[in-house]
Length: 296
Image (cartoon, rainbow, N blue to C red; front, side):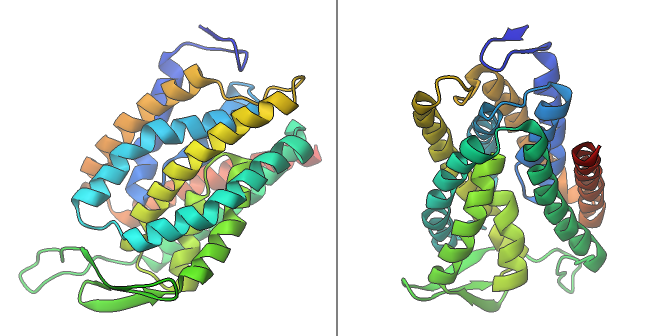
């Protein structure tokens, strides 16, 4: 089957199956899987035009709702953080989309940028796997129920209770972090969620269980804005493929939607260090390959 916008010719089963497998795995770690699908499109499908970033965001739009629904249903969606992520990331995503088209249209340079982002994500995954953080357990052997209860929410300070402890963050600090990572996410085509979550855990000091839902929701909203902005910019670059390949992106998205749902249902049966270790290996392998390609 030929996808006319991207020029990719491939069986529809392959994008669907790849997105399902990637999302099934990455959803267990709390990310959408878009950061792995982009290298697949660039290296395997040969889709290197700037529009590949927009197509990757189409995947996020279709696939993420199933994961967001899980976090809302389990009471782990921290809405003040979610709003801060969206407000901070949106401007960065717009700037990142422009940078991608204006300064990184060359596939070789873009691959190097992707390698840097993947190495960062791989490093964070490796650190989490080494720490081997275990779930809290009650005396009767049952896992503690993770729910979020917001106690204070103002423009200067947000405090919430999680697992019997009080946590807090400053929205302005979150805005700054999200703006910077939004630029990178807009260039890469992942919306920034996979990049911002480790910052919240390592710098802001928030529990990972409260960060994942906000990161996914932020990625979903900013991906919508990113796709629309790429489509808008296409009018200023008539000689370049900028608008997303809607058909290919939707096909990836359907596979991702089902993969995220199945991954969420299977997560409790797979140890977190194993999941993060597999993800880390995949990410570092792709990053290493892109760096070798850049210097070859």
